[in-house]
Each structure stands twice: as C-alpha cells, then as structure tokens.
Length: 164
Length: 151
Image (tube, rainbow over all chains, first blue to last red; front, top):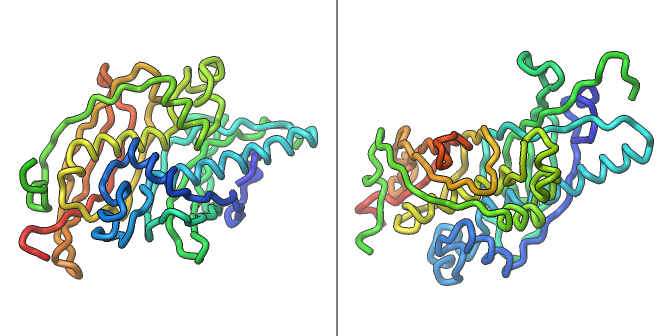
C-alpha cells in the first residue's frame, strides 16, 4: 500500500501498517457499544465461551487495523507532498471480501497489520479510477493470525502526460 | 427471556427486519477520531467537499452498527458460537448524520458442521436501509449456533 497513482501499484508489494495494542478497558468499552455479547464484556462469560476467556469483538480488531492503515497511509501522503510529487486521490472503498477472524484477540494483545497488493484493474464505468485489491492481515505478538480480508481501494489514474 | 435461540430456530429462506439505529454526528466523529481519521468522517465541511457529499460514518463503523443491531435483535438471546467471518461487505452509500438504520436479514442457507455436530453454520444476507429505504450496506456472512440436544 502506498500513496501512489494506480500505475505505481504492483502486485506483490507489501507494506506494514503498524501495531495496535488492545487494552482491556477499551476492549470492554468497544464491546459495550457495538458487540455487547457476554464473552466480550465479562470474564466469567468469556471463560465459559468458545474463546476460553474474555475476547475482543472482531469489529474491534478491524477498527484497530483501520487506525494503523490511516496513520501509515497519511504518513506516506505527507512524505510524498514534502517531496513535491503530485498527490493522487485515493477514494473511499466500495467494500471488502473474504473477511475472517481465525483466532481471537484478547486484552493485552498487540496486533500488527500489513497488506500485500494482489491485483489491480481499470474500471470501465469510471475512467479516472482504477481498483486495487490487497490482502490485509493482522497477526498478534505470538505471530498468530487474527484477521484476514481482501480490501478494495479506488485509486486515481495518472492523467496522460503527467509526470510523477 | 425464554429459551435461547439455536440453529433450528433459523430456517432457510426466512426474512426478518429489525433495528432503528439513529446516527449522530457525535458518534460518527467519535469513532473516526479513534479508528478512521479520514477528513470526511471527522468534519462536515470536508465531508461536503468530498465525493461522499457530507459528514459520514467510516465503513468499519457502519459494520459495527450492523453488528450492534444483530446483537440486540438475536445474538444476545442465542446459544451462539461466534462467527468465522463474512464473505463480502459492500459499502453502497454513505451513512450520514440523521440516518435511522434498520436491517433486513435473509437466511441464505444453513448446515450442521460435519466435524463438529454440536455446531450449526448459518449464512445470512444482511441489508442495511435508512428511513427512506436507501440501501446503505449489503453483506453476507456466517453466524454459528449450537444445535439443540448437543453438549
């Protein structure tokens, strides 16, 4: 993932976005708002659940990913601006596919997120944009995968004749 | 509260609607500040200037709203075993301040796990609509439920 024009994305390119630490208080706060099931809120319920102990909501795992992606991507954008390079528009995402939570995230875990470009294609309906697909992965401090999905991002194409 | 919902309580083909989630600016910007600080999720002016047309919720926040409505509607009273994920999520239209969201849930298919006969796997299709019946989000995914009579 970079802040780059569609033409600059190459399949196989990998980027590490950063890490997110899942504090217990925040795990419970997030769950109370968006996933108030017992095993995300309460130690005893967690103990008796399939997770074995209190676990973070899977949507908290994805939120942590987005925090890291944003920080990383904005940093790349700033650096590109500092170098005096043209700034492409990176559009909102139309969606995601193949979202999996292979293993739980527990309070105290630190998850590191990264992305690898899978493919890219032009959009017949929108000639100014291309679509870049990447696999995003989150692994915890023990290298256990806790998140995986395929992201889709709209990226501006270089106007003809445009340099860098 | 009666007995918990199990796998058998979700017949294939069933369609139900639920939820009345009121979206506020405070909630949109609060989530965005913590998890998705793109300008159109933080600021009305930036939102208006963007392709999205106004201050709108992070797509990941919208997924969390879907989940909250699912929990309130059926997961909180289910013998649930979590989820192994979603096949796809489409963010079709932005969710704006003032939207009141509801979910239309269709049961696409279901089966009992061959390896773990105590676990039922249900595939749902969720559509998120606002008060004007605009389709905001379309998603397909799996919820796992205990099968009655097992463990």
